[in-house]
Length: 248
Image: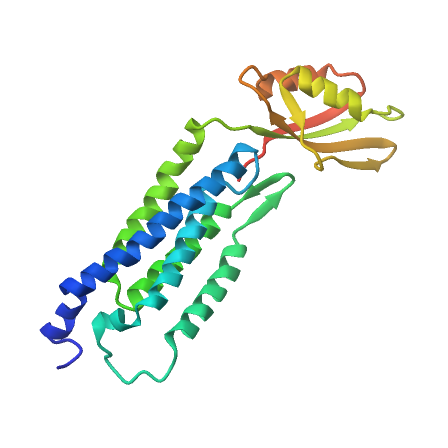
């Protein structure tokens, strides 16, 4: 029986092989749902990594792990050649290399982090490639659909679920003006925001203090970013400022 014979190719779609593919697929599906729960907790509190990032990483990790438990179903249930290397070591090398590639697309600008979901999707695609490589074609197809739907629909789900919107604020004060943290915190609370603990960064240049921090929206009645900008323009001691949505 040659590698391209009908029986060899049909082995990948036998009843037992398809059943194994479905079992393999159910594991990353469950992992995706669990990852979304963890990601929602982070998204709810205005953190950079949200539901899509956690869901994709959790899903890909499960996909790469579960296939180790089904070696008898690899390559359609038969070896096309004498295997002299451990495929799991190859998978380990692929995952490590893709991890560095994903890190290269993550960008941080001020309080904003972009590229996290792209990095997670790259890692998920490596899991899909591994599934194809070991012959789990159906599981790879289903995982591809699941990953695509995750990136397209979960962002809408995040927008529909209640969450605390985060705003990155940079304020540069006039010379000789001494800003007080309690005044800033009180002003933020009056407008429906809370300054996140541990996010305040203070710098001093040319006699002017500059404050950077993250304000977390606390309720539906919180003022919009445009209204906040108008009020900051009239705030005593402020020379210039920058407001932006803290996003991933």
